[in-house]
Image (cartoon, rainbow, N blue to C red; front, top):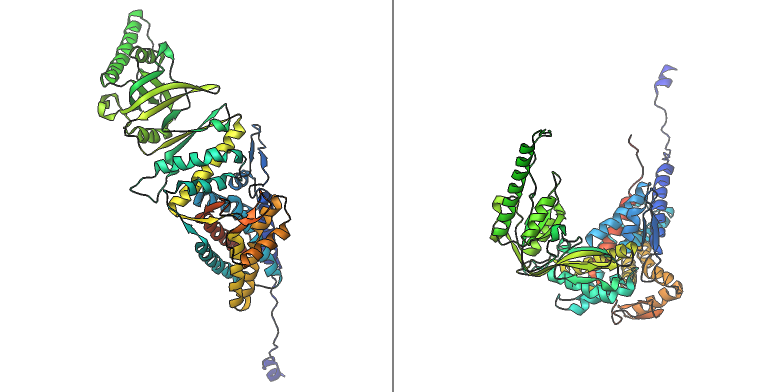
Length: 535
């Protein structure tokens, strides 16, 4: 009996059961949340897309009207982590290309829908993620094959691409004004020593309420959204200006520590006031001796940058004063004026001044601005004065102008254009589907599914324009099969046309960045199988 008990039990070949329900539920919840975000902004895609009114829930009740994907998603209060990933995806596209922020989210939503059907059919998430990686690389190659090289000297092509970016905005009716303005502003700050770089921080946008967007203008100079100091009848217009940017205070000094001084004698009080006057007068005399007649004073956090007494003496010296200049504007101002900021009165010298033909105070709308024009040896900067009848219009005009400038920046970095109107997406979809037939196994099946997902862009463009999306996309596919690479949806005519002839073009970098970022985001979501909450 003991020997029988010691004998090994016969091994039974059984399959082990692994419960994958939880990870499937987590993945399904992530995909559902991300798709919900994509569906929320999908109606905003294209020139006939709808606008969103965003209202903040706090007491300020701030209202924004826009159809810019990055702006909409940045204002949404998203709690689900995967949904927040799509908001960050839109922000990444905004940083990389400046345009296509709605397109990238809609693409990601469509890819996730196809991924969900693949997972339901039994595909492994890793296989789908690897197929997406190969698809993104191949799609960028297809886009390069469609691209048309351009030069920065071809101003007309740059204006066309900026117009395409503006045509889907709330202020699209002003695209004929804003597009050339954006191109001229961008080209004026490109440094010939670094022709592939465009720093948008060299373009300053000043907003002023009043008038219409038609009154928006590009100024070769500087604009301050504040009026000149009128204390003691100071000048408001100076010709042949010698301008100083100062970072010190023209006011009586204070002690380093907080303390009170009690003066009980009138003679001592008079002496203190006399010393203050002499101290300020000495500073004003040094400023006047250097030939300065325009003073830009940085805002001070320690004490008053100027006092009524110092403004009185500056007015007597016929020096125009603009006070409360923000600290973060100093670098831009000194670059534009080609001068140096002065941190101490002892360093106030003629070689640190900037020179301009005219500095004057101008009435604009309900307020006044100070305009500096005719700057000698001006740095590579530009200033745009944006006007509008209300704050909502001004905000949207500024966002639209920023998108147009980003499009020009894309073309400076990568000088290729491609057709718009859904043409690149349908071409990629067709060529990727053909490529999938050459592959084998699960990879072929995945790439075929994801290739069909790219058709969401032309489908949505047609749907938002009130056209029949099925017939439009079918005809578009047939035209591309016949070799018409640049056939796209003309939403104004409601039919398929050669979109290049209609001047609907966009930078290669926008579409390439959108497909790469969308695929990367979807791969990350597919590889998540659990959510761990840390206290």
